[in-house]
Length: 379
Ligand SMILES: *Cc1c(COP(=O)(O)O)cnc(C)c1O
Image 1 (cartoon, protein in one colour):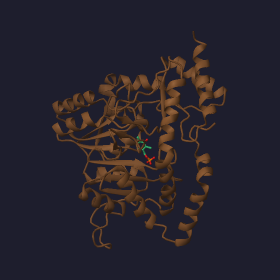
Image 2 (cartoon, rainbow, N blue to C red):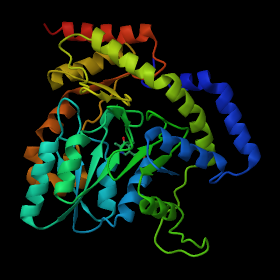
Image 3 (cartoon, rainbow, N blue to C red):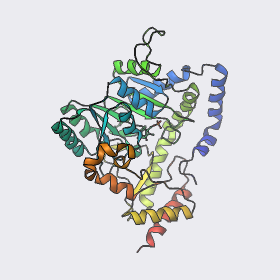
Image 4 (cartoon, rainbow, N blue to C red):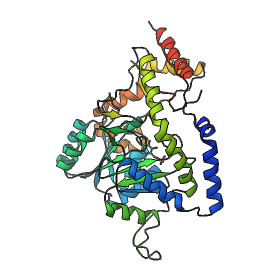
């Protein structure tokens, strides 16, 4: 059993993926070839925004938006404490200060009430200028934009949706990567829509931002291709990755997203009651980047990891360290570390189980039984 079975996905899609790769090799437009533009258009249409730009990674996508919005020294950027490090790392790289916000223990996502408290505190201290909220769609579930957006606008902040794990999720039919003033996703192989290497995308309805990130993607190029008007990166989505993604995106829409939701429902039915299964608020849909359960305490969680490993069932902890314990962020977070209790508790009690569209009924049952057996021993 695999945690996320990309090799089996390849076996299922092999004919079309091989064809896509060979076609790209033969046509020779390896950089920004026709498949990149086609993919950008179909992703924008699916998500429901005007513009999509492919790039080298989710991290670069975040960075390019921050560069375009002029986020830098003296700026406060509000980031959830429980996420992958990149969400805050990109803020530090621009010289701005990440302000860590605790999360909701039911959804794992940024707690809007805590966000407002943090904005007020930063304003009261007067040292940093609140500029931006980066809300993360953790484990595939969109953040609470209905509450985050009005708070941000009340204080004049922009919102960037980090949809690296969120692509395919939705809220009342509105799809992830369409929230905020801009959104990003990642095509890292294990993400909900993954390629065979690094890749990412920026989504927005703002023509100026779209033009801006396209310039940054190509070294800061101007309207005259030989003139450079700003500082940029070299961060393109390879034609080869785009061609592979076109095939995978079709499967994603036709059955993969449906299938991971069936797996999640089956887990919720079969796992023992002592396990807290992911809570999906009414109207929300997850794309299940991870299926993350909560155990009553660290000791039970850690024993469950050992018991599953003994039965060759892969399970992983996302994330063992909240951002406020990351060495690079200790200084930014330390005055408020005691306010970040949910993220701390989650890092001690969560466990992500095997989750992917090709997980068989038998494997799913084996996981649920093994979890039950491990937790039974403690009665
Ligand atoms: C994976 C991830 C990123 C970074 O994406 P890459 O494509 O790996 O650079 C950013 N934010 C979150 C929440 C992620 O999970």
